[in-house]
Image (tube, rainbow, N blue to C red; front, side, top):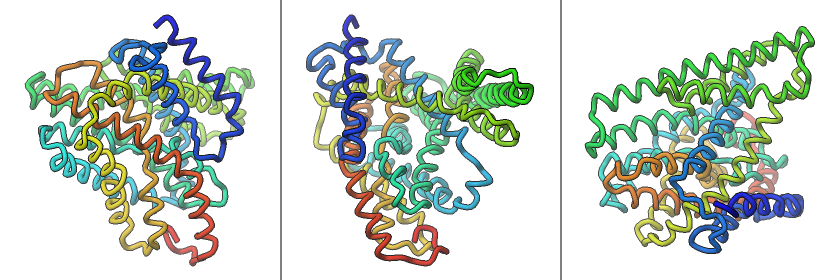
Length: 412
């Protein structure tokens, strides 16, 4: 631990120095941070020698996901989203359940050692997508707006949707393994969801009320306005946990509440959400370094053909076929279906789910196989989606412009 923080700081400073040079290239920030962590980790240089079960690793992961969940939820503008709701609604309402079902089926075939609750848990862990791993896909202006917005909204909302699913399936897997009783599992899930919703709604409403009221009375310094969303996210998380609720559900509900109430007011808050976005980006960068250092290195030592096969399937057929099925009836063309299907990177949410399972070792009979598969899938996604994001986004944008189609289609 002595050199862990200095090593991480050096990586962050080094990437900052070249960040503009690598922008738009196949070398993405998650690739740099993950590889740096791998090289500095316990299996290599040993500079970042933090154990995966260390409290600081869990705290980092949880704070990062809480900030990202709150920020993503706060950006959801339902009135504006209604004009472009068809694509993300299909990806989330049809594609996501089918992806989980396909992931479960693939695990049952490729990893028969897993019990059925463990196979379902692996499918849920790998269901949420992370747009940050293919940033060019959601930021390149020449791409069709509905494609960019569809993938961005999907990535922003499926984390929040998968959190309660993760809690439910984890409780079922633990009950099946005999580590907790069935009644206790049901009560635990109900408390986590219920208290999480209550704490999140209260924190989001309080923060929005302060921002709006103080803004109207001109008693809020613009600098402090930037701290309100960050503080609200932390309040939602830290208020839910002592009650027995899920801090992640609280952060997501808090963001939805905060964003909805904030948009109803006519107060100019000076882009108050900037600080939480920047904090989320910084914590995400550190999380990927720690992922490479303490999770990926050991997982490579347990790599097998079955694990690699499932990882490849998870990033291809398990994602792409459900996406294609979700678009039936919208008459998309093959390049659009392939583009939407391919860009479903696995990242931050999956890392946090993995760390939450590692935190209580031995509660699942085939925990090592499950975690190794999840970690290898994330690593493969970081590499594959990062390297292909910019070139494929440019190529698809060029094809799209050369093959115009009427605007009344979901994905042209």
